[in-house]
Image (cartoon, rainbow, N blue to C red; front, side, top):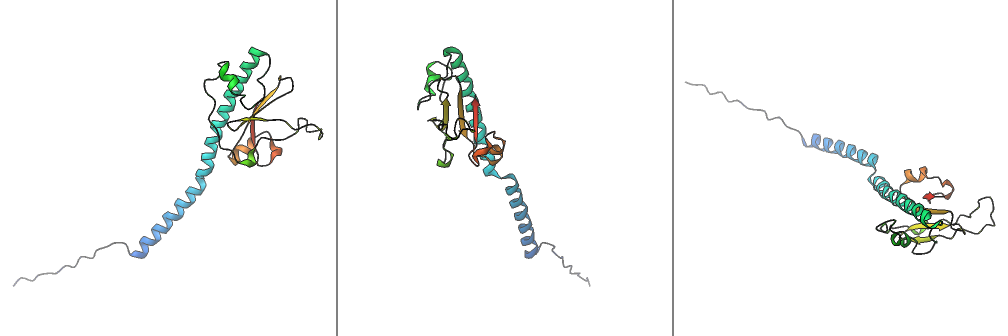
Length: 168
């Protein structure tokens, strides 16, 4: 007579609690990585990079215009159009969305003279532009979004209103 052995195989696997613990740990690690990367700040830095490039191009166009005309273009609502007319740039930089709290600065021309009149800014597509009365000095400014880029800004007395300026 044959004796049949019955072998019971023990299936090994994870319990429900173990799976839940692993999922929780992965979730915590993913959240930590997401916070460390800070995608909102990275997007703001990317926007700021584009704005810096645009200010640099506008600054070069302004200097080229100055060489041709011995003065900068007048500060009016269409100041960028002067660069296109003179073929200094091909296209006006696209409009940037600016919060109202980031409007162009109203800082006085001489910080040591509180009686000095505020700078009159010409704004086109979110970019700010001003010239001296004789149009021999000019400033192009744009608000920056990223807190890390704002810290690098030279204009530290504006609080959270950081501007990148060209020329001057």
